[in-house]
Length: 305
Image 1 (cartoon, rainbow, N blue to C red):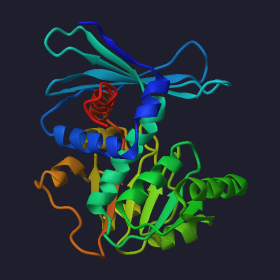
Image 2 (image 1 turned 180 degrees about the horizontal axis):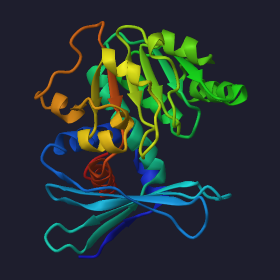
Image 3 (image 1 turned 30 degrees about the vertical axis):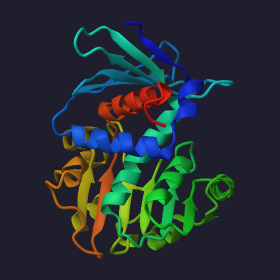
Image 4 (image 1 turned 60 degrees about the vertical axis):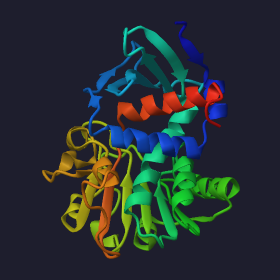
C-alpha cells in the first residue's frame, strides 16, 4: 500500500467547522475505549522551539500527532501540526497529513462540542479572553452551536482587542467589542479563555450563575487560566481526566473532573439547571487528531463532502 500524503494547502482547503465538529464527537466518544499515551515534549537546538508528540489508538486508527512551535519563523506559520497514521494490521506508514490550519478547527471543535453539551440553550453573549490566532476559530465554532448575538473581547493590549473585535465581525457578522476583563466575565453566558497564562485571568466572583466556561490554554505544567475558587461552585468537565489533572487546568485542584465523552454517551450527567456554572478544560488528545486526519482523507477521496 502506498502511503497517502495531504499537504498543508490541501487539508486547509478541505477542512470546515462541520467536519471538525463531527470528528471531535467521534474522538470524545472513542476516548472511553481507545488508548491515549503520555505526551512527549521536545525541542530543537534553537532556543525557544518546542514540539509535542501525542499518540493514540482507537478502532482502526493508530498514529501520532506532532505539534510544533517555532517562534522565530518569519515567512512561515509559527505553529505546525503533522498527523501520522499507521496501518493497524502491519504498523507500516498509511498516511501523513499536514494540518496546521485544520488544527485550529480541531481545537475549536472540542470547545464547541462542550458548549453544545453543557452551556444553556439560550446563551447569547460570548466573551473571549485572548486575541491570538486560535481565538477567532473559537468564536466561529461556538456561534454555530448557540444563538450568540454579541461577542465581548478581552485582551492584554487595547489595540489588539480592537483589531480582534473587528476581525470577529468581519468573519462572523456578529457584533463584537473590546471590554475590560471584569465587564467581559460578568456579562458572559459563555466564557472562552484562549491564552498562554500561568496565573488566573479573573476573579471567580465575577462569574454569574448559569455561565459556561471553556478553558483551552493549559496544556503543560504550571499553566493556569482559571481561579481555583471557581471550582468550588462549578461542575467540572474535561477531555481526559488524568491528563487534565496533570498538565491541564485541573492540575491546580484535587477534584476529579468528569470526561465530556461520558456525558455524550449518556453515562454521566451534564448541566443540571440553568443556574449551574459549568467548566470544561480542553488540554487536547491524540484521538482528536486521528479522527480529524481520517475525516480529511475521506473527504479528499470523495467519500464525504
